[in-house]
Length: 386
Image 1 (tube, rainbow, N blue to C red):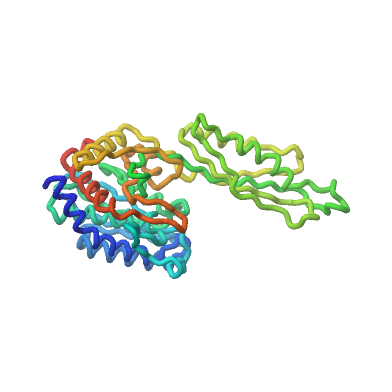
Image 2: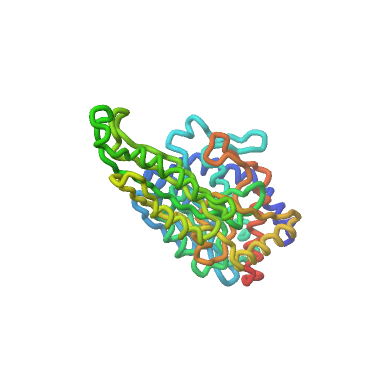
């Protein structure tokens, strides 16, 4: 089987892939709606079975209030297992589809979740289908579908970490950046800083109070100043709230802080700085809550070898695969944080994630699908490459 024959087979499948993409986009799966998530995952599971046949192994985990996880395994012809990591939840609330239906126009597919990341799911499944249809050698593949990525993966993280253990590689089907795969991502810290002061009447007894709002306004510049372009660290105070009325000295105020880091060592610096925040009025008490939601995705030698293999596969298929580093995080961060080989951004080309102009460009879909199939086959021939 030549790279040209693989690409031709993928191109022939494009109409079916577009139909499958419509099917997935028309399953509304907002991260916060367990009923729709459950129904959507059941339908996606049935669709995977239709496309790939009955799996050799299935595990579905109840994730409580969050979307369940589903892992299906298909036995390969070579040693080892590759994890294909996808999320099926989207940021779009129920009812969005009625006002913004799936559509194909001018070589683009649009609709809620089409780019982030339902095209990626279609490409992942069809890459395995091509391997099986064309009898290409490949390791076993395990497709993991998670339902809470858009809200930080609170329930699925343990399953991602468990199922990536011992894998030859983890391939993440988040969207590509202009065709490049993502070999590095920033880590994310999500924190809340809360000030508790003393309430009083702003006119009758102003000095009896200690304003939580004033105290918070004091420390916000210190929080923002923790950002460091040299270190690759950004800090954003994106939410602020507090008080009960303009004539009341506020007893409570809080702000939400988003931190992005490229260097794992920055965690300790940021943690220490947030703990040391102190307003000038000793009557106001500050508390900091939150956590590091995802460690940075820093490529180790295993991930570098995986990228080199991927680049060779793309070159054999006639195109150049670039790499990039991005500020956004994904579930791939969890895998990289454990020192396991991972490659991200194998999904759609397009733009508009989380926005009404979200769309997938359709021409690259078969190209990326054939590329993934070729990479899986290459891992069968050279499992040590990862």
